[in-house]
Every structure is written in C-alpha cells, then in structure tokens.
Image (cartoon, rainbow, N blue to C red; front, side, top):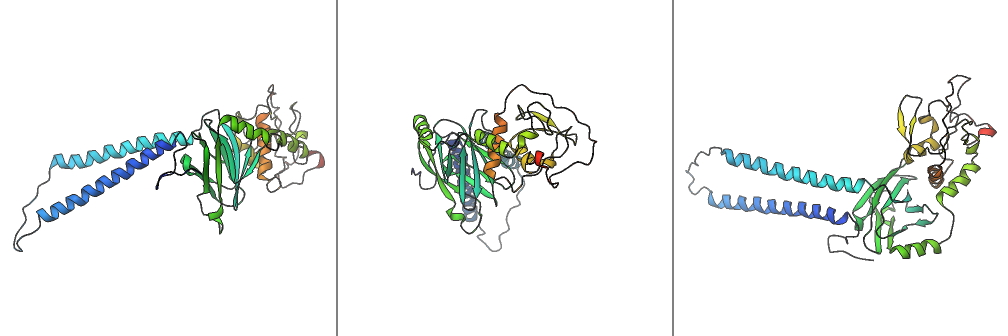
Length: 338
C-alpha cells in the first residue's frame, strides 16, 4: 500500500493536489500570523513596558491608515480564501457528465460495492486509472461516511436516500478507504481498500471475475418477478406510467409540482410510491419498503435507466372512479408489486 508523507496521504486523484494546496496555504497563513502576533506582543511588551511606577503613558491617537490597513488586508485574504475554496468545492461535488458509476451500500460494519456490469465487492473497490468514477451511496442502517484519503474526497452515507461522491484516480496502486462517521462499537473496523489499476489490467479483472450479468439485466429479472410489467406497460395501457425514457425527464405530479427523474426519485417511487404520484394516475402501487433490499432497488433503478425507445404519451386518467388504493392497501394478484 502506498504511503504519503508523515502528515499528508499520497496524492492520487485530480483534485487531491488542489485540496492540499488550500490546506497548506491555510496552515502557512495561520503560522505566519501566529508568529507575527506573538513577535509584536513580545516587542511591545519589552519596548513599552513601564520603567517608573509613577510614569504616565502618552495618549495614543488613532491612525486612519493603520485602521484601514488592518481591516482591508484581512478582507482581501478572507475573500481570496472563499473564492479559492468555492472553486475546489464545485470541482469535488460536480461530477463530469460521463462517469463510471458504482453503487455503494454502507452497513454495520462493511462496505458493499456493485459495478454496473455485475461485479460485487465487499470492503474492496477496483477502478481504472484516468476515468472519472461516481459512487452512488446509501446506508442500510445508520449514518456512515465514505472517505478516500488519497483522493481527498468523502461524503455522508445516509439511510433512506442517495448521496454521491466522485473522483478520477491518477496513480495505480492500493489505497485505504474508511468510514469517517462513528457508526457503532465496531466503527474502527469498517475499513477497506480501493485498488486503482491500469485500464488494460482493469478490463482483465472485469473479464476474469464471476459474470453475474449487469445490474440492468438483474433489475429486468426482478422487474418481471415482482410483476411490475403488469402495470408499467410499454403501450401506456397499464395502471402505471410508461418507464421508457423516463430517467432524466421532467414528471408532473398530482400536487401540481414537477420533478426531474433521478436516482433519488426512482428510489422513493419504489419504496414509498404514494409520496409523489404522477399526475393522471391513482396511487395504486404498493410500497416495497422493507420488501426489496438496497441492492434490489439499485438493480431496478439501473433497469429503468436502461429503458429506451419511442416515447408514448401518458394517458390522462380522471381522478374519479372509486376509492384510490395506496401502499397500505393489500395488492390484488394481478397488480401485486407493480
């Protein structure tokens, strides 16, 4: 495993050097003003100490230039730090459009990773050099925090929602990963490693592993097993919306609001479908909270994201016609788990 300096881990991503630059600047600035203030304190204490108990010090009048200087200089320094840190913040939190996506699930006390082509890993993650990687994360139990020290990126992993981080590794090697949020008695053991490989080595690793099929193909099977296809029909004649081309589109809700369909919206629609009901449809879909694992939810999401085709206009149904069913209403056999 590669090691960095005594105080700073090795620089192994495109943003790591920028983060270190800001950090070292802040440390240097703090040290400079600490030395300056203590030096001035000692100089003034020695030079202007009272030599005679009866001595009366001279009255000191304010200096406009001095007061403006010690107000303006810190202002420019602080604003410079603000602009610099904001640029780094945007670079860390805004992934490129084309990324290699990996799902991560935090669980006391392990990390589970799922690649789009089906590889599954526990406490270990393989990625290629020079390719942006976006890690989409959630937790099965408590709050965790995924931290890659060599890449200088970390993010909270929160139960019930998706968060993400991204990085682009610049050096092949093996680096540690940690949970940076106290999560229970075995928190210190929730560690792992990230293996950064040259592109040809990564492709060889992918092909040499157990081929379980892509997440989308696993999601397609789960979609059929749960009978979701009985309501979400491609011909727009089912009880639910058409899913082709749904990801990335804007959906109008019964509440009058509109949302952009992303991973978080799809996850909520699977687990708590009545929270945001598409306009023109009844809340007939049962909830899958506690019935489908986090891995299963991720597979279903990737399947929906993979659905492409000619868009079919959604039929607008009247809101009448009997009492609406919700996730607390037992599903009839023909609509079970749509």
